[in-house]
Image (tube, rainbow, N blue to C red):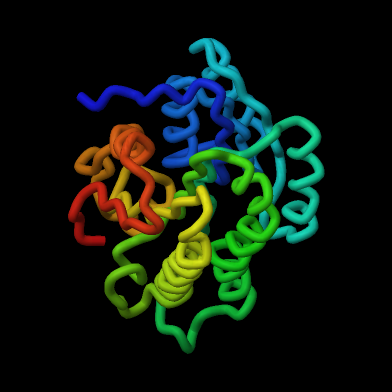
Length: 241
């Protein structure tokens, strides 16, 4: 069993924190001692996460917002800078599947939403949070990717796969630009997990055949305990998506 690293005094911001992988990682990092800044659209889910973190002896701050709204992200530095001296961990998890089907049939509104949430919002996060990350002595940025798009092209997965391919390029570019700073960047490929997004993509699949989101937490512990490197791709499991 992977032991949690000592994250006492660390500040971790997690997007899409109210459910699935984001929620599991938020709980895992909180139990390791990090103060969690949980950002998500779902008020009820955030409140439940806050209750669970506090009942386990952890601490949490909640931001109820939709990062598709660029103005929200632009205000983050001021909101966080007044309370925190630095940001040590960014776990960028929020994403949308969109719709599966031929590229020529994709609704332009869905295309724009998926690309905005999965790609552009993450660029905005990097841009907004970079000064706080650089105040950390060992900042770690994690971006959640997928084998679909991240490693292979797949027909009918257009907006999602394309956004993940672009996200990996975005993250690696950011890593290369920070080779001489305390910031390390990692892609996290969780494979198929028991999440709402997976159920939407594969409605006929038995979710009990898939690992729960909590299973990914030891891999994140390993990544945080590893020596910093500019860029790395962490793959949880070689599932076929």
